[in-house]
Length: 325
Image 1 (cartoon, rainbow, N blue to C red):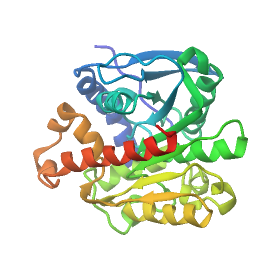
Image 2 (cartoon, rainbow, N blue to C red):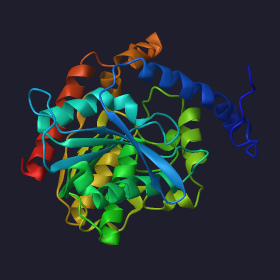
Image 3 (tube, rainbow, N blue to C red):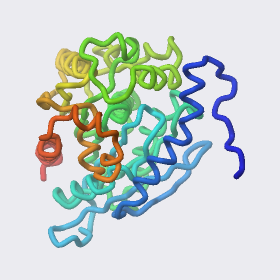
């Protein structure tokens, strides 16, 4: 067997080195579980400055599963995984459900992953995919005046960054941003947070943070949206924020909601009772969830699938309102 290339050999910190050495195997394991599932989306690849990006394109469907002709609203979706794991295919069935339920396009974005591509690579991808697909809106059947973003955990961070960039650049407007258990404060490391309760070890969560951005970059609004000023947030798309109750990120989700309100942004918030971090993605990936250690699954509230379904219903209601469907 060919020897796998060592990720970031210049990093010698023992804890980070250990994580980096097991990261390729984590990625391969996760990808194997995802690829074993039924596929729904078209994979589309296109060029952005200096790189290529692929997306999972779920076309708008009617109740019978037929493509809906004409320009349709579009939801850009960003997967979780600490900026280092995961891909758009992991929420394939969930995106297909939303495309069918609402009759909209859903685009799962395969943004570049750290540590090979640290901040701001993923932030640039999150915004530039929207801009590129909007430029070719007629080709994709997209209504350029009805676009929204949604993400989970690190993907929610990218959603907020895309929403802020949309205001800053003035190239287009977003109708909504949906944030599931968002990661919004990288200034405070995971073991410093108030309600620490996560399936991953603190050392792994800390590695996600340290390998994605530098200490100075972690004060940047696109890394830690809770650091954004009112001027940066003013004019952002209306937000639906769904923190998980048993999640160390809950408090920063509530804090960010208040910052948005203070900047005059419309916000709806609902803390999902008894839920763990990642519960929506767990419910959407039965095979991957089954591979989660039994001792971890025992800590999860048995209602998490029902709560995930409720979270998606809330998401669809919010998007239906903002897209005027």
